[in-house]
Amino acid sequence: MIKGVIFDIDGVLLDSMIIWTDLGERYLKSIGKEPEEGLTEKLFSMSMEQGAEYLKDKYNIDESVPEILDDINNISKDFYYNEVEAKPGVKELLEDFSSRGIKMVAATSSPRGHVERALTRVGLLEFIDRIFTNGEVGVSKHEPDIYNLAAEHMGTAPSETLVFEDSLYALKTAKSAGYVTVGIYDDRGEKDQAGLKENAELYLKGYDDLSGLMALL
Image 1 (cartoon, rainbow, N blue to C red):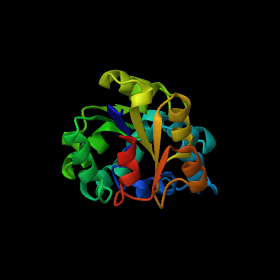
Image 2 (image 1 turned 180 degrees about the vertical axis):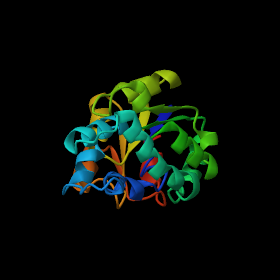
Image 3 (image 1 turned 90 degrees about the vertical axis):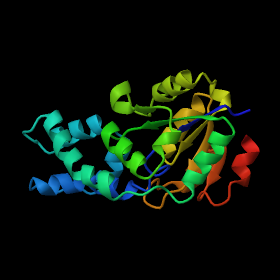
Image 4 (image 1 turned 45 degrees about the vertical axis):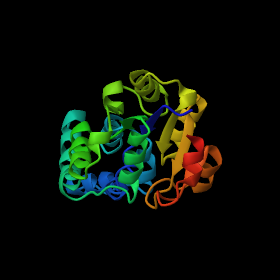
């Protein structure tokens, strides 16, 4: 029986992947540097801090990592504060989970202030008991720490906890740690959708047909 759910945020709760597909490029162009080919893919699996360190070293940027993060945050801040919307149908899903007494938390690589503001504006934050961030945990989703801390907070075992992810590497991490995984399609996210579908307990193209998900509950 499922007692808790851990949601990724970008591409799962929020329709926000568009900003992350070119955020690194936008930053580099803003300081007069030409982005390398494939930069988005390289940054995709990194936390914000790891990405800033990569950019600093790769492009010989004089700014410190905290300064780079400040610049990047300013680029994405307006998007989260004023533009991003919830994924279609996700609010109804959270309402259903809430009615069943299922606990819900979120685990994200994005800045806390950005996602809290966005989730509040689109009416989703009220369903999420706590948000865990990779920056605060100290490791990326290549390690299961963030999921384990989230499950510990809810008091649920991995086998009774759903993890919603749109990234293959993160879903594999959760799966290897014993969590029940739900792969979410996003047209600007994971390139290997076949791999996501193969490794997930359940794969959803959207939140309009939830019959398979309800069977897991």
